Image (cartoon, rainbow, N blue to C red):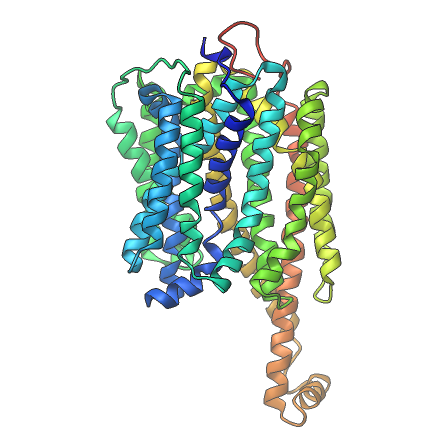
Length: 508
C-alpha cells in the first residue's frame, strides 16, 4: 500500500522535499524589496512593477485548488518532480527577462507551477513517515513555512544590493534541479494509482476567471482607490459572477475539479477556518511591521528585515520538540496557547510609539515566534486528521488555497485600514493648528526658525507620522482580538487527531 512506502533514505527525501518547498515559499516574498531596482532597470514605473508580485500570486491562487485533480491524473511524485523542474526553468527565464512584459509572463508561469508544490510536499511527507513520526514531518514543514517568508526580503535585499536583481531568480535553478532529482530517485518505487478523470471545463474556466479576477482586485484595490475605480468595479463583478457559478457547479457536479465535499469532515472544516483566519492575521503582521518600520521609524528595507527576523528563532529551536511531543497533548490546547501568545504580542504592539528602539521591536517579534512555533503543526494535523489518504493532496491544496486567499484579503484590508485611519487621525490632530491659534503660530515660527511656512511643513509631517502611529496601534489592537477569538474556533474540532488504523489511513 502507498501509505507504507518507505524511501531508501528518509532523511535525504525530507531534505529534497523541504528544500523545494523552502524555495517556493521564499519566492513569494523575495522579489518584494527588489521592485524599485527591477522597475529602474527595465524602465517602467514602480506601480507597473507590482505586477511582478500580482502575476505570481494570481497564477498560484488558480493552480492551488487544482492540486487534487492533477495528482489523480499524474501521481504525486511525477507532478512534484515536474513542478520543481519547471519552477527552476521559469526562475531562470525570469532572471534573463529583458522587458517587464517578459518578466511578468514568466512570473505568472512560475506561480502556476508553484501552486501544487506545497500541498504535495505535505501529502508525501505524511505518506513516507510512519504514523508516530508524522508530527515531526509536519512540524518541519511548518518551520519552513515560517522561516522562508522572513528570509525572503532579507535575502532579496542583500542579493539586489551586492549583486544584481536577476540573481534572486537564478539561485532557484541549482536548488530546484537538486531537489527534483533527490525526490525522483528516492520515491521512484512509490506505487501510485493514477486515473484519467474527465476535465470539468465549467469548473476550470470559472475558477480561473473568478479567482484570477479576485486576486487582481485584492492586489490592485489600494492602488486604484477601490470602488472609485471602474477597473476594480468591473473586475469585482466578473469575479463574483464566476465564483458563484463555480461554487454551485462544483457542489452539484459528479466529478468536480475541486472537491468541495471535503468540508463534510468536521475537523477539516474547523481546522481550515482556524488556519485561514490565523494566517490572514499573521500575514497582516508580517506586512504591516516592516512597512511601519520604514515609513514611521525611517528604517532601510534591510534593517526592517533584521528587526522582524527574530520571529524565526523560536520556531527553528522548537521544531524537534513540537514534532516529537505535540501529539501527546490535546492539539486544541496547543493551538489555543499559540493564539493567546500571538494575541498578546499584538496587544504589545498596540502600545508601540515613534521613539521605540530596535531592541523592543525585535523582542516582540521573538516572543511572537513562540506562538508561530506552536500554531502551524497542530492546525495542519487537526485539519488533515479526518481525511483519507487519497483525499490528503486535495484537502491540503484546498486549505492552502484558502489560506493564500486569506493572506491576500488581509493584505488589502490591513493596508486600507492603516491608510484610512491615518488620514482620519491626521484630520483630528490638525483641527486646532492654524495661523489664528497663537500657540500653533508660535510653534511654526520656532520650528521654521522664523519661516512660518517651513514650520507648518514640519508640524504637518509630525502629525502625519503620529496619525500613522495611532492607526498602527488600532490595527494591532484589532488583530489581538482576532487571535483571542480563534481560540473558540479551534475547539469546534473533535479528537482523535492521531492516524487512523488500517492501510487507508491518511489522516493524522
